[in-house]
Amino acid sequence: MGRYKLASSAIGGARNSLRDAIRYAKDRIAFGKPISSFRPGAGKIAQSAAEIYATEAVLYRVVGAIDAALAGLDKNSPTFTQDVQKRIEEFAVECSILKVFGSEMVDGW
Image (cartoon, rainbow, N blue to C red; front, top):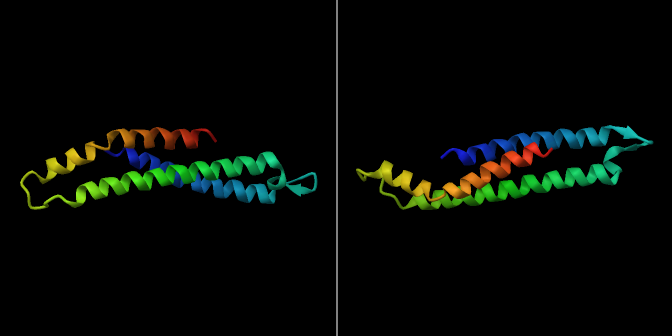
């Protein structure tokens, strides 16, 4: 069930890339102005930031739901491991969506 982990890794990589892109856009001068002052460059940075935020919001929501689903389990139960697996499997679709969305977000840059 590590699909959501790919989204988490994508978010980390995307944040680093965005930080570097912002720094570059501020430092790179074209026509006497930083390229961050031109609409296309600023728009791409804004779009990237929005995609990171959206992916992160969905990730927190899904992981929070998984955590809540696991909270009520009896750790001393002989079927604890099976119960955990069953509850996590209920979020397979959401985790798969996160996996695709996170990897597509980074690939689109």
